[in-house]
Length: 511
Image 1 (cartoon, rainbow, N blue to C red):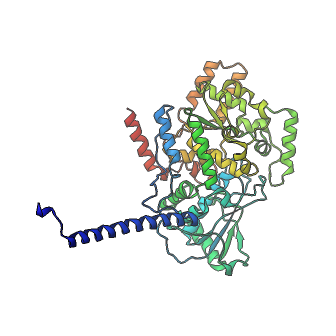
Image 2 (image 1 turned 90 degrees about the horizontal axis):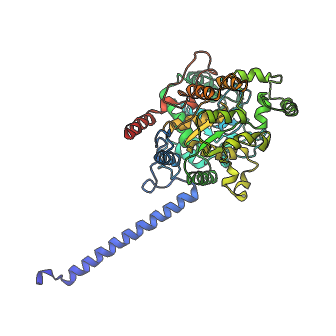
Image 3 (image 1 turned 180 degrees about the vertical axis):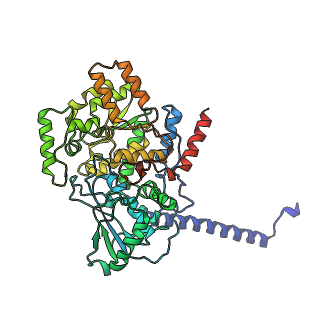
């Protein structure tokens, strides 16, 4: 019995030890709580022990509409949005100068500077490419400026669309990014220039870097696709992906609303996104008026002539359509969806601005597929009001829903179509149906002329798209014709190794 009793000194020592332990635990809790609060106030990422470890490659193929596939797509869409990883260690280097960039155009033009047949006259700055250029030349990049004088007249600043602190912090192991020029350079007029499009990294090293060293502050204005699609070092290609899929996160307000929309859509099962590019500005600029009345055609033509920076004025709409260079009309899109075998109860989210012609032009689509959903049906008027006059922020909401959908179908091959396709590949080759518009309009005309039966038309449409659903493939490179070759951001195959492995693993699991 005696050996179980403790002497008074032993009890005192044990009590002191427990007191010290309690003080240490309490101190740790206080310190971590304070650190979290300061991180939030300063806009810094959460401490690594409490932060999630997301990977933008999570998820499966996205080709099934089963519950398991929906969960896979859901997990992939949420990836990278739970909490940012720990701030990477800052790269220390001697800066050769400051790079200013001016972004023009819509959301995806600013993001990745896609150049398509229908957007080639716009001046676009690729944020992703410019970060890569700044890294390669050891420059200091100033947070991009957005053009508020373009056709869209969107007053948004970079910070209204993207999370500025995350953009700066997540890339600090590669390049220094600052919010504004240092005071000593604030009154200096920057040397303004336009680098040559589709250039290799050697061009920047030999031609541009000497100019930056001479002038110290250089502005790249009205740029479009200033880096080549192919032939760049692997490290630079992967940095382009890292900027696009990790660093360019949307502002918290946009992320929150996007998450709410996606959650509401998933509550009732799978859904597809139809990027129906049939707004007035697209039709006026492209000259695509198939299916429009004479009055509508005249209105679109007047609009095209009213904007001097739209260089092409006289356009043969039917010739352009037969070449596959026009977006499908809502009526044509309806025929294609039906021919591909989508059932009548398919839930279709329309990602677009205001459709030209309004409800009248959507009548056929709604008759065949009555479960049509718009963002106005998922969010209240009060929630949407702050975004109403900000077309770029509205497009960001559509972008978030598009990359989270079970299937993505663009009616045109423009900027959003290409960038979303690439993002969905990066997330695990989720299903994107790349419509062959040139062949489709031929088949549609044959159907309407009664030279094809419905069964023949449907079979032909299915066979035409068997190999056009974002399966792993390498980009097509065409020497000397960069505008005609596959676009880097639509299929960044250098960055898709992990996504490809996960896709194969999912296939074996299903078998």
